[in-house]
Length: 386
Image 1 (cartoon, one colour):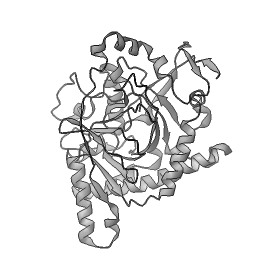
Image 2 (tube, rainbow, N blue to C red):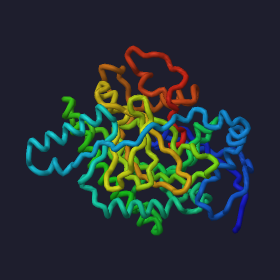
Image 3 (cartoon, rainbow, N blue to C red):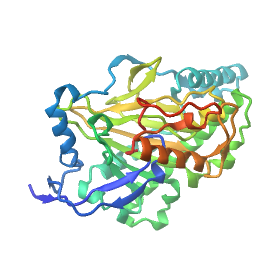
Image 4 (tube, rainbow, N blue to C red):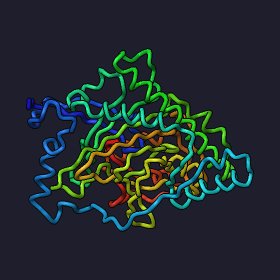
């Protein structure tokens, strides 16, 4: 086994699985030898790069997992059969739309089956995703040469274990998915991502229009503002986490910032969400896609729909994969609300970045409340990983 010194790390700013991954800015830190690693290993050097955090936790066992909320129970997300929309029966169509609206109000998350995206598209995307993310870590950190997007791992500014995300991902703006600009070796990956993104975009647009219709808001907003160039996909891998760290998080708690997120996950499990103040583990269903409400939709709906805090827990034995599509508007899109003061998507992104820089966490929508309380301790930290 060949080993080499790993001499640099990437520092980036942004947010987690559903927020502003595409806006992250990557800079190279000064050369710093941080350890020895297997040249061919696909896994990021979490234990080496964050050795100080692990050493601090071991030195103070009471603090080792302080801040990690306790899981209370498992749950099945609402499961909605979208084929009901295609049967030509107005009553069944309206009932299906009502289920989507109700789940978005009460849970903020739901699953869909018979969604119109072929299993071939999803399987090819997962196969290409695995091939990409199983490449040696050192090849992935040089991903600028691949013209894919931004590769990111861990949480660069983490100062304690509960702020560390044990995962890696590629954030890919849809504007990057042009076969003509890809090297021949990348054509299968680019083709898979393009087909996946197009299918997910169509589904997300349809769901968004239903949600708008159910609350009497204009449905044309999404086609007008959520153009392909502003949306993105994220390809995630959660490497196995050593048994010595049984409560590590794959992605730390956060809310998504776009209008909607649509996720295809595997059968391993690990997604958890807050429900009635408790952390609930979502039972994996690989045959369904998960849809969740983002911050923009909560604001635009006057808090009718809920953007719910969620996280992913690391698995000691198995790696986990998920791929997500984010429905985002143009930067100058104005979000008008009776609960929040009007703001553009760019305003929101900037405020999130400023709050993370100053306070270490995302204050989010509360910053824009018409009667806004000040930021306080104990609020959810939006991942700087995502």
